[in-house]
Length: 187
Image (cartoon, rainbow, N blue to C red; front, side, top):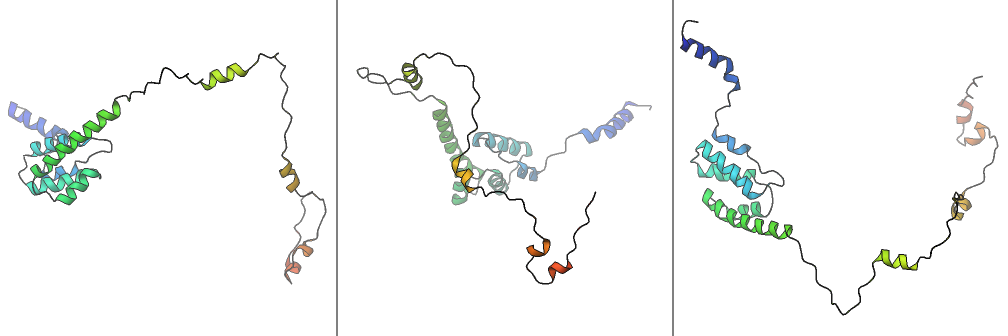
């Protein structure tokens, strides 16, 4: 190596694989709205990619946005309205985002409880009611439970019989019994 330009050339050749690939317009179709991601977040990611790619093709942006959005009320409204430009998507998206944020705000704030009338007696809690009924009893030593068998199960069990039946008597099909052999007994 005799010069700095040669060194930089070798350095770039060595580490070119670590460089991020240059973005192309079709990268816009890789942006997807994740489950649970708000429309506002998705619109932010999508807009940042549009700026990064410096896109001018409105039809491609509209098509990529519709492909990337999660199915739901907003995507259904886009299907019905057939927007031609990204501005036609952005206007209803902002209205939907505002409604989405209001609903989330309502869900997160606590719902106040209705005050009770002070003239009525308050009902006892279950624990308090059972404590009043209990009378202190003398502690008894531990006794294991007796096995409990259910009557119906015992009635349906057929009695066991120990008897031996010949194989020929069990098989009713003609000529099959003669073909069967008794297996040898292992001792």
